[in-house]
Image 1 (spheres, protein in one colour):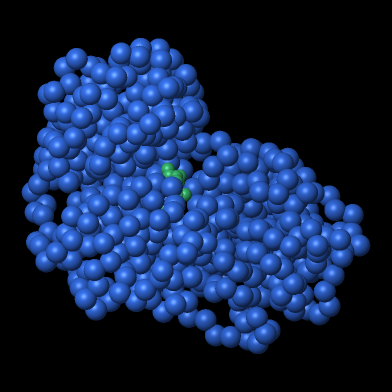
Image 2: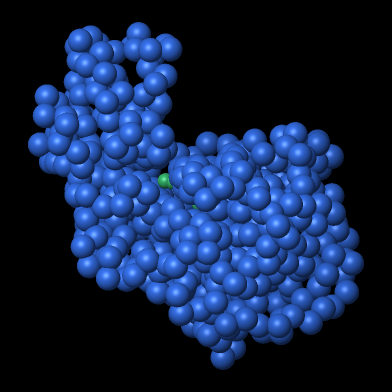
Length: 569
Ligand code: AGP
């Protein structure tokens, strides 16, 4: 969940690394820092807060070999001591680290070192420093003793740089003698890049790059092309989140076009005569999976969505007649990756539905179904969610042998924002509930996650039918209930629920395309196919979260305590 960056070349590496960290900042923004060589001594600049602070502190400084890090705190509080890069106690090595060293406490006890920070990373660094041999040998030896995940760049005072990784991504590119290293391809320069596999290592000395396997043997690695869409997207509105919501129509259309012109679906290897589909994901991608499961049930499959963080420990009977779909915007979410690896180890059919080409999940799974939402930078997932639902819907049409819809349909894509007059009012409530039935219950869950994620309001989603089984006890004049109704068959039942809420003093706001809710405050949706309404109805809910967040004066792109990619478990 942190970002790491490195530069070796003839230009000012401090500028290059700060630029790279700026791009990676969406992955972690508690604190950041750089390490560089000055007169053969390792120096660091660290700061709490964003890369802007680092940029100010490092202005007019210059170095040719630089490593940097933007942190999302796991071990130890947010302060300069815990910020990376760390320097080893001998002062000979500096290191940046993504991931978690699970056995750091045992290792710490074995090392005779005065630690400066509370981090697991500093323990790993000193373990490396305590090993014998060349720098790459030291890193390989230490990596065998650590349990957990890592992507590291180690810089030695003689200018040698060593990289290594396990589970956490790490890439490098070599552009005319300038070497760029980053934990995300987005922050690399050049046309081609190398992607490290687990337990692979790299040594860079005098611009010579050598790759090693875990036995310390030199290996050959092929370069891959950097995809055109691997650039930081422009923003046309105040924030990435707002720009990304407004991109919805275009990315749905792009996904449809790509699915039509390429043989994406027919290239997917499916189990013979399979009738069962399991979808595995976290957070918003889990909500998209719940929706996808409904689409697959609609065409006669036995489908179910699982939270990856539970599935990996669960007792689900894995079987060869099931298609396992792993849904992830980033393709690097730790629990989703662990679940995919677990299913793959049983040699079963896996499909990655991701928005990130070259992601770890794509490499693990047998098949890949890309979503074409383009880079999503805001921590709160919006266009990627609608695109995931859309892709799963289109895939269900393919499985059912039906034609994909015409692009013309999108000319009238209904786009509703949340009525601004309600924003201030909703923000004043102590309790916020989202309710719905059937597909709308899934939208309620997503709406609630979005609101709590960026506005920090304590809210939750309930299936309307469950209200009377407990939650109704919380309804009074301090509660606002936002009810979603896009499915004809549940209208009447929902109205009864709303009357019960009103009778207990709760405020009701209905989000619906139907005219049956005249007695309540309403956000009116345009009519579209029912199965497609989860996309239409979630957009105002995304706006609701965004506007309340802005009303409170928070930054929706960087909510507190969160980061875009959850690469730790
Ligand atoms: C969404 O708004 C969240 N930031 C989060 O729930 C996210 O969807 C989840 O972490 C899964 O991420 P992924 O799609 O990259 O796997």
